[in-house]
Image (cartoon, rainbow, N blue to C red; front, side, top):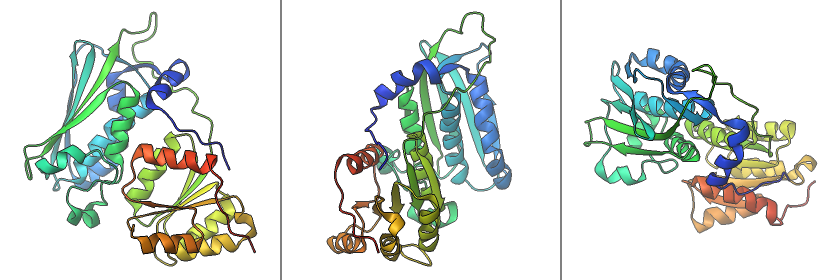
Length: 321
């Protein structure tokens, strides 16, 4: 089993600062996020308007992660609008911080949903999941990455059908002495912690989970059904497998049974990550060979705690064939 550790966001930020954070021009962060958003924008015919301050504004930040925050907010706005919608991205220097705002003219957010909008797997309108792929953990990830940089993010909406506005606040710094104004060198990434296989037929949820696990330093592979999970488990030999239960071709229970029968599965931890959380579901998971049963939605901190727990506690692994 690979060495897990429970990550404290404050410690992560200060530990990474000497080697991972660089002086980042706000304009460069904008460019990176806009590039990653070009494909969905073109597909939906949306228009993006950008307004930035004339004077340079610098952040002590990881350019890749801040670009991902903006990309997640832009993609979220693009998902929940009719074709040809408008999105506004603006930045404004305010004393010791910069305020970046992503505003859209989309479906809006009900008042009762605003307090939980950044919770993992929150879905404002479940009827939209098939058409738009679900929110997954994109907004949760944006919030966590922002807080890692000492910032904050909040959501506002006047209600259903009236669009939404996400405001990101990040501390600013003076430009580095004798440095060109737009240097955004991304330094070496964290060493890999462990190997994790994610199996889920919900593409948005699987990709979002994979992104979060990679940002925690793990090597991750993703498959879409139970049969692929068995095949990839043999080839990849992961330390941990996160299996959804209701998958096509082979459900999570049967996939777990097949994996447990293989000699190569010794030492692997199997986690049922599913929306089914009744006592009978947990019993069936234990009988199939799962070490843990986790009911969606799962919080970011809970996911970290689960991985740490699998390392520090002895799990019962059935005898291999």
